[in-house]
Image (cartoon, rainbow, N blue to C red):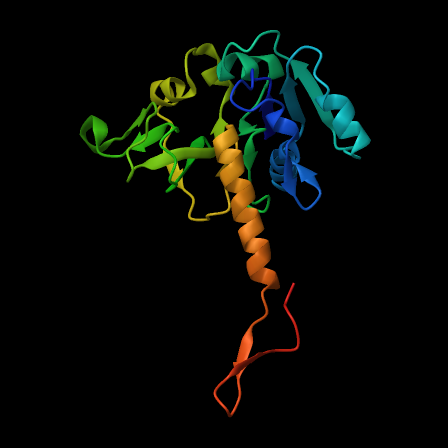
Length: 228
């Protein structure tokens, strides 16, 4: 399966979003790269804009996979970006402004990941539409709906279609696959990135907070030390 990582957007909502720190010494684009590499995608193509610094930055950071780059001359949508990668076989599309659990397994069949996330600015899956056959719908997402969140596996025959990704999913009958993990995050806007960082800081503080054990006088005392 060909891995395609999209990193050519205009990034008007969060400049340089592909290069934002996400913790553990990583930058955002490395999360999608790790996901595709872990799932055995070959080759992996990163679609960048003209004059992007991403190729040189990844080289400096030690990425030596069978990695290639394609240029999308202008930010004219995801389907144009995918066509720039010129896939000849089934491919998985991931996004430079998503944070993944890189060990998540991606099926080798056309499908799209959906998750229950609290973000209305995502496209979504309506399983009750079309007489129960289901249909993809554009943002805003209702609070209880499952969001298109993470990645999509597509076939080269889908490249003939244009428009938003959800329109292509509907035209090709691509179904949703529910992912239960909560580790995926969209950091494509300054607000979402701030929420992500706040959650990381909160989780780090929780790990370092000492736990307490009771003693005979009823008072709590710290144990031997925090578990980090």
